[in-house]
Length: 565
Image (cartoon, rainbow, N blue to C red):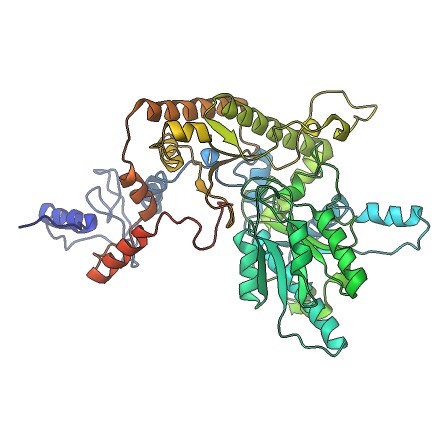
């Protein structure tokens, strides 16, 4: 008899459990605690917690807590999750504010007026941080009539919602212009680079807009190429998504260069195409870092930029659950998209995709803005960038790795800004190429020729065994023959932790170099499978489907790149 190729571990456990434990007909449903076992009835040490159906009887809260805690211990450690841009650290006072306000619903504005006021203050702070006031001043200084811009904005549950809101506003304004001119509105399109995060593609698919995804290249730093934008826009283009901080390599897309090309296009055709800046991460890095964008404009100082989004839960230093979108002026947000709600005794205006949502994160965002101030945020961003530079330089010093990101590369002396008179002259990010605190790296060509059996995915998996979560994935379509490992340096990355990370990367690499070819396909397969579903055995059809998926598994360019945001 041949050995079975499929074993259901749950069936084995349940079978042995049934043999060992006699049927018990006298379960207590009163929630009494047994002190004879580490767990309370009815979940004794020999019994598992129900997984896929609600149990007939409940269990003591401390019992369920301990069992869930045990299972959640299998998760990765947030502080060592270097794949994510999402912040995982809060100061003690911020944690207190979060806990004290976790029951407040941001949708209940009439019931929580103080929280609404705090939300409005955050929008105002971000609008000024992103250049609304500077533009008004420059118009006045230049002799032109001052345009009374009135920025409007909203908190969101993250940048995904914010991007959808910004894209929808651009689509509606395009529709209004087309209808006013007696033209059809059947074929809207939007332009973005192939490095676009999935939220941008979701907008196009969900709101029925043709996505014009432009190829990226090493020349364009794996980002949107302005020259390709020139060739891709037409009268049906509702706007261009420009990303301030690519999730692949941390590079900033040249907003000003794209704006100039759209200016030229409007002069020739009369077609006005706006820009939405996806500053999910860069919106809180660029304004505070000495490097900025490297010298070019990116925000509301450019009239063509109509809206900007950012994630408060990334470099805004709040934990997951808050994003922001700001429009340069209320005229950029069509009125028919704004709902006037008469709810729970009050009247409010709403332009969101969600209704009920947590408000505590908004309060913590305001706490950070006031507690840290401009200088505090600058110190945080400069420290993150400094640590990212050290990591980049350390990896390249091994001779085994080369960095695809550029933040550790020195800028030309002529492009370095002079410090202000009251600033102490120390080395800052201004001396280096601008970008997010992201280190994207790969094995050098020489190393790959000498050790062809060593794969970057293997390095990623072995680092995971040491609790580091560092993804390995292909660059965007067009450059997907190159795979990169990526580390996001957040505020929680201390220098000591950085030293440990470099040591572990070196040790893992040396271990693989010292071995002959190692087959770690089993580890890769286990990583791909993840958790099983509903604990049932697979039929032949499902097995064949899995085998077919495995055959094409190496083609990382297929499908949408999540790029681990």
